Length: 399
Image (cartoon, rainbow, N blue to C red):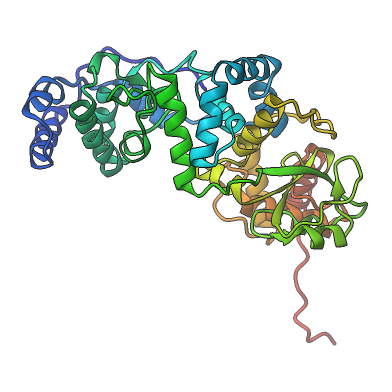
């Protein structure tokens, strides 16, 4: 989480009040009560800091070791185990009903809000109204705002207690209003769904959400593996799934060197820290985690924290000590690759699949381990090569 930009004490944009009036008209048409329309929506405030958050960009590209170490630590593991004991009966019941093992629910809860210790402090309705009246993603946030207003009516929620993230995520499990509306469940049977104050409601809702996202009961997220010498890293990536027998056939084993299990399941291979770090085969439930939060780092952290909560050992391969990359350096890398005829698209500073593929191509050309990871020596080599005069192709008409 990056620091909040300073919020200037300025009046809202001149068109904010007009936008709110239009939102009120829409709310009436969609059945929001007049009490909520006049008592809540009519009194929303424009929050400069929300626009600041939305426009702010991180200065650095976080590495997987840095990301993981900040999220899967001993405190979260111990707290997760304490919560497993506290909610033992509930978690067993949720597994029976929804097919989601309790330790995964605890992992999501721990990563989202530190098991409820920090649910966010931004006023949800004000935040959503501010974003709904901002042109960048107005349609999306206007939809979310309407649903949030309907939730106030449906659940008799107190607007003063509806606080969360700057983008509108709420409660123990940080549901957006659309997820709250569609998937949240009354777990404690009090006739209300309160994701802020009821841990039972929050965990029940998370279980239902994951079930609806397609969780396959009886399967895990993935496993750590060991790769053979001279492994072809071009086989890595979410778009290259293979059966476990196929992976075994090219020398991939369990992390401790034992053979992969002989089961009919396929998975994709991920190397989030390059060849110097651990490798994983991930299964369909990993994709379900990505539907909750579309970040491979996040999904790996969920899987790892869940495993550690139930007493599984730490990963075998150590996490390498990788230097932090700044966005400007990644842009320079992308410019360099494009100059060398390796098309990675727009130089946006995002280390995405196209850039990783381009790095692999460059590494292969220069007899490096082609894992697609921009180690310092790789970035320096790209810089040097892109600044060197490139040979002019022969016309083929020599005398």
